[in-house]
Length: 113
Image 1 (spheres, helix red, strand yellow):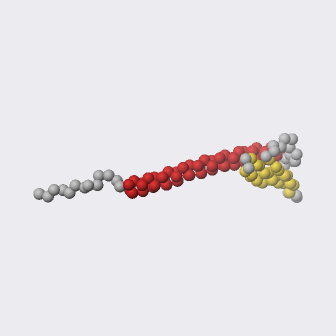
Image 2 (cartoon, rainbow, N blue to C red):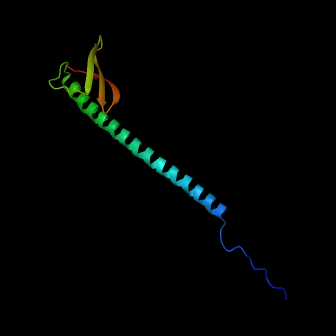
Image 3 (spheres, rainbow, N blue to C red):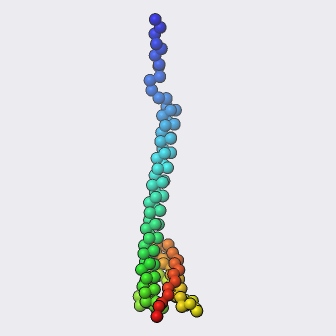
């Protein structure tokens, strides 16, 4: 009867351990980089949403009253109202700047008699 050959390799070599640690390290670095990229993108999207809400609210105020000189203008908002003749439209160019992010909006309004 033949005896089964026993393997003398009961553990991992140093090279195998180093390769496994290197692969694990690279994977962890990519996971952390993607995590921080997502955090930065979330901050930017939050700024954009805030700018959109400000612009929407201010455009609504301008269009409802068609004010050429509103009483209170926040410092982060710049706008210009132009008449489009002969059809009676008003063109509103609005720029909102907050946290170094600027969004430009254009809207048209028609004031009925």
